Structure formats: structure tokens, C-alpha cells
Length: 118
Image 1 (spheres, rainbow, N blue to C red):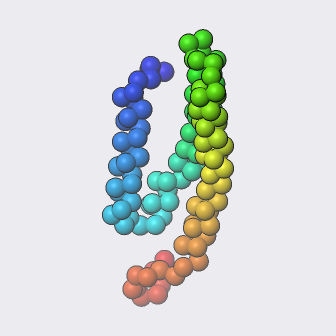
Image 2 (image 1 turned 180 degrees about the vertical axis):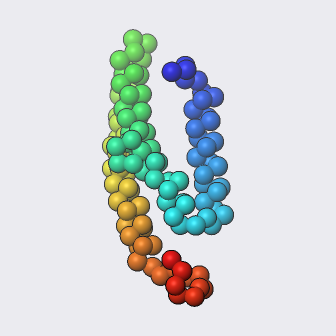
């Protein structure tokens, strides 16, 4: 695995930005759901990964010998951990995608056709 750098992380966030721009241009719902699905996977999606990242950051800072042992540092580390819990709570967003898929499966097509076309 190549070394992580701020640039490699920026590339990931730029990809998310491109996805957002794409979704603002009104793609077909099925395509939009397929593109977002990996982001909201209940085990590996962004909420879970970001929560794990925030917890790992809090641990790395807390355990580093150069981190000041102070109430301020403890408070900042606690804020990271609280944010991690809040992110982890969003793991259930994958259920929203499932519900949206079911909604679109029930909705009749708005395209005009002969009635025999699938």
C-alpha cells in the first residue's frame, strides 16, 4: 500500500465533491443510489470509517508523549471521541438506501410507452 499523504486524502475528498456535483445534476435515481451505496455501507461506509478514523486520531494524540497532559487536551480528545460516536450513529443510513430502492421499485415508470415494453 502506498504511503498516505495529505494529497491522497485530498483526492478522496475531491472525489466526494465530484459525486456531490454529479448528484446535483439530477441523475437517474437508480444510478444515484448505486453511486452512493459504497459510501453508506453499514460495515465499510464513510460514517463507520470516519468514526474509526476519529477514534484512532484521539488515541494517537492521547498516547503521544508530546501531548500536553492538561484539561484542555483532555477536552479536545473527548470532542474527537464524541464526534466519532455521532458519526458511528449514521451507519444506519444504508437502510434509507434500501427503502429508496423499494420505493422506486413500486413506482410505475413515468415514460410513455406501448405498455408491452418492460
